Length: 404
Image 1 (cartoon, helix red, strand yellow):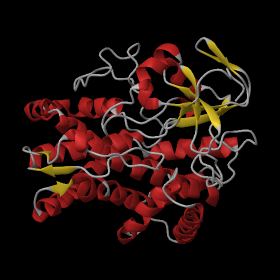
Image 2 (image 1 turned 30 degrees about the horizontal axis):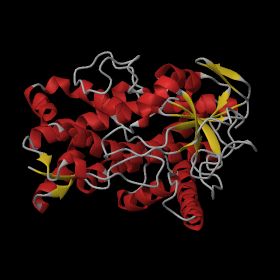
Image 3 (image 1 turned 180 degrees about the vertical axis):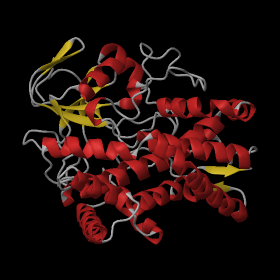
Image 4 (image 1 turned 60 degrees about the horizontal axis):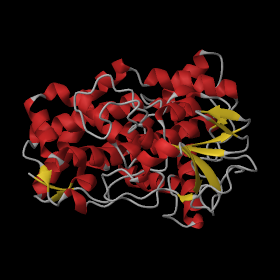
C-alpha cells in the first residue's frame, strides 16, 4: 500500500477495554484518520475505513472487488490459501450466474416466508430454553441457546439431517478462522464440508425436497437453465458462514448488551412492541462484530477527502461506521426505539447480506421468547468480566453466564 509512509501503522484487528465495548481508537480515527494504515495478521498492510459515508460508498462501488485474489491484494492471514475472503472456496461464478443466484436466493428470504417460518423458530427456541432451565442456573446462554438455535435453522433450510449440526458448527468456525486453526486443519475441514455438500447436492438433484437447494435447482430449470454445483456450494457456504456463526454470536451479544444495563431489559418487559427496533439497535451497537468487510480496489478512487490508489486493500469497519455521530444522534448510547435506523450491520450495495431477513427474524424470535419465558433473566457475572472470542473473522463472546 503506497500511502503516507510516515503515517503510523495500526495493528489490526483493534482491541477494546471490554467484550461489549468499542475500541477507544474509533472516535479519533473517524475524526483525524478516516483512511488509516493498518497491519493485518498476515503482516500485509491495508487501509481501514471508519466513517459511515465512506464505508457505505465503498460497499456500493463495483470498483472495489469482494475477493482478495489479486496478486497484490493484502493477505488477511499469513497462511491464507483461500479462505472466506479469497473466493477460492466459492469457485468460479460468472457475473450472469451471480445475478441469477442472487435473484433466486432473494426470493427464498421473503417477508412472507419468514412469517411462515416463525412458528417453527419459536418452537425451536422454546425447546432449547426448556433444556437450559432444566439444567439449572447459572447457565451459559451462548452454549445452550445462541449456538444451537441458528444451526438448527440452517440444517432445515439446506435440507440436511439435524444430527449433523455439530459438524456444521465446526465447519463454520474453520471457514471464519483468522488465527484460531492451523492451515492443515482448515484445509481438511473445508474439504470435508465441500465433499459433504457435494454428496448432498447430488442427492437433492435426484430427490428434491422443501429446502433452499431444491428451490434453486427448480427455479433454474424453470428458467431453462441449470444452477451449477459450484453456485450451490457457494450458497451453502454463505448460509453457513453468515447464517450460523454471525447470528449465533449476535444472540449472545444482543442479550449481553440488554442485560449489561438492566434498564434496557426492563423497558422491553414493559413494552414488547420495542423488540423489533431493539434488535436493530443491538445490531447497530455491536462493537464486537469482528474483522469487517475487505475490498480490493482496481483503480484510483476518491473516498471522502482522500484518493485511495489502485491496488489497495480496504477494510470497511461496519461497527465503527455504525457509531459515527454524523450518521446517528447519540451514537454511543443505546436507544431501543431508534427509528429510522440505517445501520450497516448487513453491509450495503449489491452484495448486502441476502439472509438479513432470516437473521432479523431469528433475533426477534429469541428475544420475544426469552422475555416471555425468563423475565427475571440477568447476567451471572459483571459485564466487565465477559470475554471475547479470539481468532475468528466474526466477533462474539466466549460465554454468556446468566441466571433467572
